[in-house]
Amino acid sequence: MFGILRPCAHHSCPSVARAWRAHLCGLCLTLRDRHGQAARAATNYDGLILSVLTEAQRPGAPERRTAGPCALRGLRPAEVVPSRAEGARLAAVVSLALAAGKIRDHAADGDGVAARRFAGAPVRGLAASWAAAAERGARSIGFDATALTEAADRQALLEASPGRTLLELTEPTESAVAAAFAHTAVLAGRPGNAEALREAGRHFGRIAHLVDAVEDLADDRARGAYNPLAATGASVEEARRLCEDSAHGLALAVRDLDLDDRHLVESLLRDETRRAVRRAFPGARRCSGPRRASSHDAHARDPFGPGPYEPDPYEPDPYGPGGGDGPGVPLKVLAGGLTFLTCGVYRPPWSPERRSPWTERCCLDGCDCSGCADCSGCFECCSCDCDGCCCDCDCDCCSCDC
Image (cartoon, rainbow, N blue to C red; front, side, top):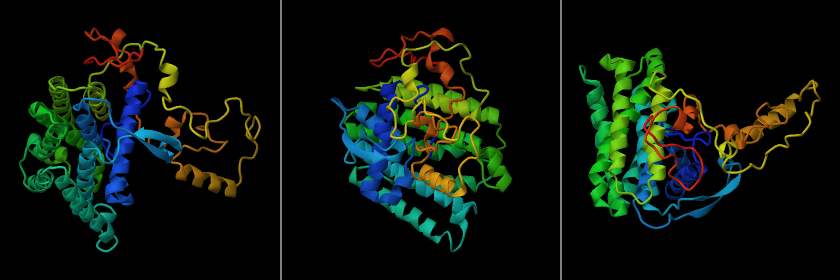
């Protein structure tokens, strides 16, 4: 899983966290049902916003189905977006195209297994298969996949041409994301939203491109790989300014949308996008005031309930107060295997993480809460003109522009 949008229970309303998981798990299962088990590896945090946008523009209650137990949910069932939903299918198409593009980029940069002549052949073959599947899936929902393929080709040409500016290099990504965002209006029957969605897509595509470039800058320099900042000579400060400007433009575009349900869309495209910018640029503007306690604080850490391996808080240390001699090698190997198979949800009795909520134990949760919890209650750290949470809970998840 990859992408810049990574909401977590620490700073989200329980209702937002559940809705986000429904779309994330729905995307993963749509990839499996329509493109095979291997396609689940292409699950993209950012791609699922297309499923969210499509659903938010449609009137009526959202469609859900019950999915079976999954290790990433603590081996619990969940209500998820069905794989027949057009928004999930569009998200799957874009996720496959992005994953195929990443593999091709690694091969072109001479990076990793994909660049090896013989060992990388299966990986490159998988990328070609995913690209073809993306084109077939796009045709089934009336989306022109050339918006994605032409953007990738244009990106390669721009990167091979010296003297380009940073915004010239982000333009193909902006155009591709804009086309995908605008198509959600077609799927939902809201043509009036198309222009605002196109504008939102341009801003989101620019932010995603620049955040990825900043996060990879040191590694790309060490490997001698292409990076937009290094190629253009642009500073991290310039990239930060462009991201902050686009985050503001994205919020304005989202405000112009005619939506039946705004909560999750605003949480992802406005609040979580700003958090992504803060993670990438530690010097970006952020709240620094105290956080006001909420009656939901105790539940926000684990809004989905305890997992199947939730420990007894009064369970004694199996190795005594001093920890004893610890487990032997065979037991460690067995415990390591169980931890791996459950993606970290299971932790052995001697693990310091055993008593943590399962949402923290999960290795793929991907939450970096540095700098985000401060804004979960904005009432005391800014003078915004907000009314607090816009959902039907009593939490303090303010949606102000701070």
